[in-house]
Length: 142
Image 1: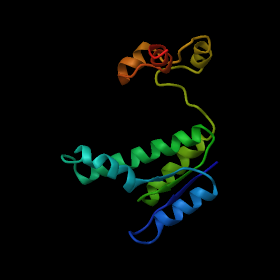
Image 2: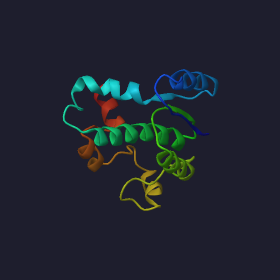
Image 3: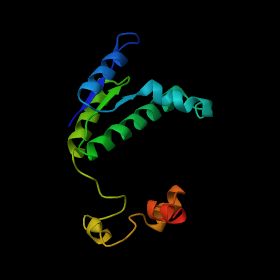
Image 4: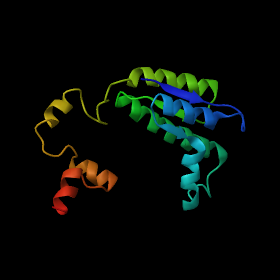
């Protein structure tokens, strides 16, 4: 698996190439402009500066790509990145490839302790995200 990143000046064919490569691999293509364009109508960008916008842009894209790597799958990215950020992503990709990292605040044996549970989400997780776990959601509708 791998993360393929297309970056460059506007109008140079990044999106076209990213979409073609994604179809051939096959892998999802994550486009920064589409992602941020989907969020723009909500007004979330009205009060943030350019530096904060770019941090959010990169963090959202990397979250999508890193999740693919954790699932042993590839991703294609169409976005603006610096050489420094590309190097950082490369290092992170190597450490993530095929490994599901421990959840925040857990030790390495925590996944073994969770195996016996019917529901993998704790109440703390539900309260933090505001979303019930899948078991509880399906029980409501059955």
